[in-house]
Image 1 (spheres, rainbow, N blue to C red):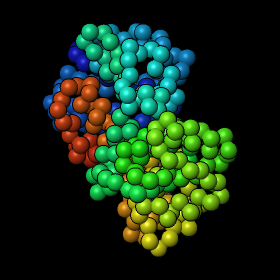
Image 2: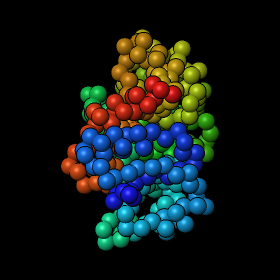
Image 3: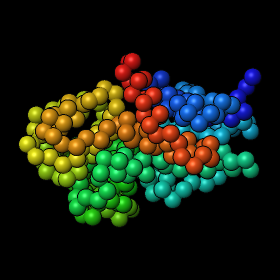
Image 4: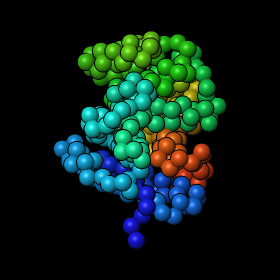
Length: 275
């Protein structure tokens, strides 16, 4: 029998995604036996056809790269949070047929930091300048009182980050990637780069450090996160972010008041351990 309510994560590549593990764990814990959550390999060219073919059983979509901006023209509206970074990772398909986009990465980052006791910082540093970096800036706009220094590889990236800072109301300063080890003096460092990129910096972690938020979750720990822990620094990982943003997705898609954070995290940890 087909499920009464359907949801899925879309992207390319998508086979690595932990979203089905997290969402299905939530459904099981909540007793939502008539809900299903799948993954679909969809690129930008295939997105309009997929979205156009959704029937009334569909309740929501999670979007990963490269679809977070491509989805926006296909929607009836997006939240202010999503508009602030021009990126949607969550679509709720309402009963009236409207498709509304949101970005749960930003509040997910804030929640993950708050869970580890980080609610306000005087300054921060970001390693990298991609799409995740702009979401990090949007999160820092809410919790960072002072400047944010972005360490980037090119002047074009630097200009892009300064532009995001102006848009989000953040005092963004930029520095060359060659000086990235200087970021470690900040009370909060957010690493947004692909796997392996920060490995070269692990040996430069000083004796006294603040909090590292490394958005990767596989492989884990990263060399940087391991070195940070060795120096007794506080570490927030990519699984923390993934779980917290997924909690918000489950709540929006199903209408439950509170998604089961602990059960979702445990399921994610088991899945990663099995890889």
